[in-house]
Length: 147
Image (cartoon, rainbow, N blue to C red):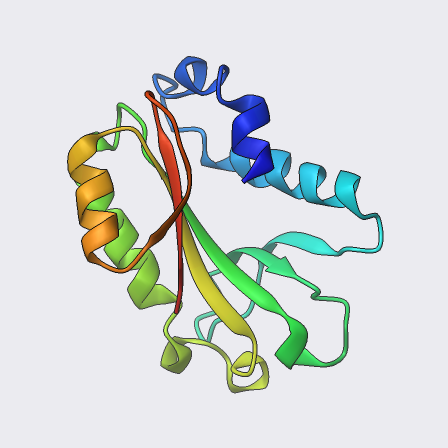
């Protein structure tokens, strides 16, 4: 993933932040994708779930009336504050984005989970669970899984 390559020197500055760095990643990746193609639409924190208080981290193509072109993604970023619970948090996002949890009006959207990690045990678990690594360096990696 090009964004990870460009920003990877900054990541170590964000891991220690209390409260994590997931919202920064949400905004940064959205801006990066739009900078590559201004016709692309990516929205943050969108209501697609049956429970109104839950939101998808990203919805791509969300302005297109054809919901089957949408891509809803849950994001999880490992930080020092959530390192011990990171894998469980990824599992929660996988459960959250299952079709039965999505509002019937949005169920034809494509779905996935993206995880940014820095621990080897997280990398191993993600690979074992079917995630595909799209970026890896000596400090961190980024993996995605279609649900």
